[in-house]
Image (tube, rainbow, N blue to C red):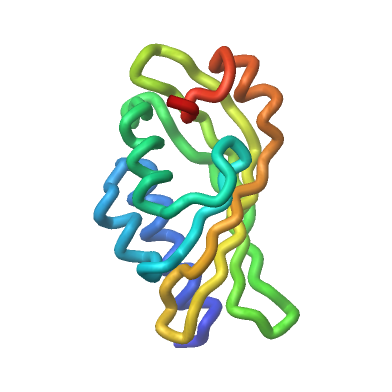
Length: 134
């Protein structure tokens, strides 16, 4: 199997684990020293980031609409997942935003870095500020 197919399979697992707030499933895809960049939190450890997300998320009302999966043409082990995320929180707030998650992989096909890119304006308006800031 070529790297593109391997990375696509890893990101399918990631998206499923994210949709189900499967913290263990998410964390096992990352290296122990990996970092996630969140527009709301900056650089953070994956476990801490996903714990915050899962603590707040209403997984019955949250969903993803996939758009594109893009692979680096620069010879780097990088994949970008482009999707729309409808995020609902347990306290009844909801928002929808378009996202590009940039994933970088190591030689063992684990994620070393995830950079999450989206405009936070609508999210902050819908959520009454930064919901992850607690």
